[in-house]
Image 1 (cartoon, rainbow, N blue to C red):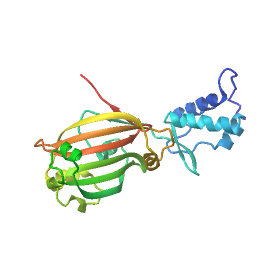
Image 2: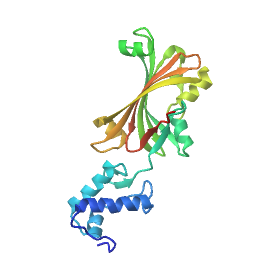
Image 3: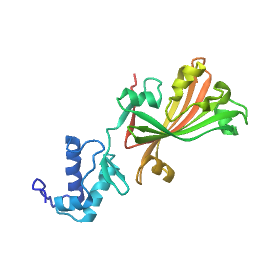
Image 4: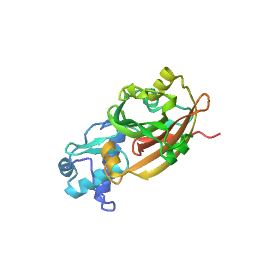
Length: 243
């Protein structure tokens, strides 16, 4: 039993354990990606039941301080990424600006025929060719976001010849096609993650996510892409300055 831990009969035991671990995380005793003690180890340290230890870890996970890996344990989350909504940037640039390493896993990359709703969004005729690129976006190998971009094919022919697990889409827009970003319209909505999203983002239920829709225009004000993104709510937040 931990000699620094004194039980308080007026506070639920799981909450006392949770608060102690949270304080240690915030003080730096456990760093980002470091594994917390197992349920058995917590039982021994705090002289509590397995159910109490498990509930304490679940509360830490609900607060976004930790995440679990099946068969491996519970690990400390990185500090939330705070994206400033002042300028138009892409995922890769946002992560690099914070000194981390962005990477992507391509989930699908293909040419599709625009259905009525998508054609209307992209200001195309129904059936027009559209590039559909879906990727899992990561920071230092931690999955943060599922992102699907739809791009009018006529604006960037043969773009799928690129390796989007390594290259930035926005960099390719400018380098290969001369499309510099002009402006964007973006909406943000809070939601619960669906089972497939939880699996890709390595989250446990109930898991909060931020759903983003963005229409991006180039410097000639031509609609360049329609993007839908699902961000981990425990690791990502958006910051907007209003004047």
